[in-house]
Image (cartoon, rainbow, N blue to C red; front, side, top):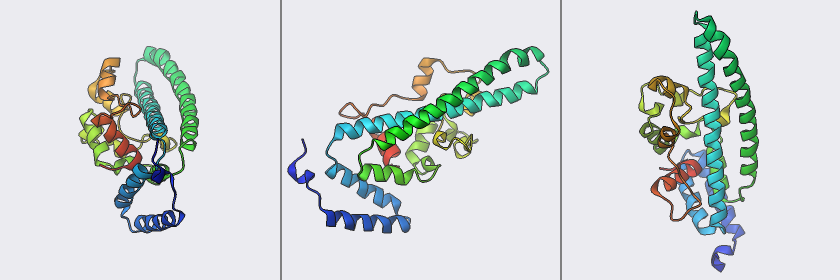
Length: 231
C-alpha cells in the first residue's frame, strides 16, 4: 500500500508541472521532460501492479500489430514475385492461398487495433499515460530510441543491415503496425532465405514480463523504451 504522502495530490504543483511540461516540449527538450514524467510516475502512481499489467498488455499488442503488418507485406511481396514467374502451377496453387491469408490478416489487424484502443483507454490518467501518448504522436516514434534500434540489430533485424527497412514503413494505412523487425519481417525472411521455427522465433523476439518482480534487465529496458522512449 502506498504511503499517505504519495496519496496526497497538490493541484497547484501539478499545474506548475504541466506548464513546465508544455514549455519543455515546445523547446524540443522532450527527453528531459520524459525523465521528469518518469520520476513523477515513481512517486505518484498508486498501483504498480495495475500499471505493469497495462504496460505488458499494450507492448504485446503493439508487437502483434507489427507481426501482422509485416506478415502481410511478406505475402504481398511473394505474390508479386510469383505473378512475374512463368510457373503457372505455382500461380494457380500458391497465390489463392496467400490471398486467403492476407484477408485473414486484415481481419486480425482490425481486431488487434480495437484491442489496442481498449487497452489504451484503460490506462490510468497520470504521468505514464501522458508520456506514452506524447511519444506516440509521431507514427515513427520508435526511431527516437537508440536502444530499440540496437535491440533490433542484435536480434538480426534490419537495423543491423544496410537496407534500414525500419525507416521505411511497409504500409501507410497500418500506422499502428509500424516499428522494428519481428519474426515476420519480409526483408528479414528474404535475407535469411527460410522461415523461422518457433524456437528460432523466440530467440528473435525474447520474452519479457513486466508483471513479475524483480524485472529482468531486458524487461526494464523494454519498459523504458516503449513507454518513455528513454535509453
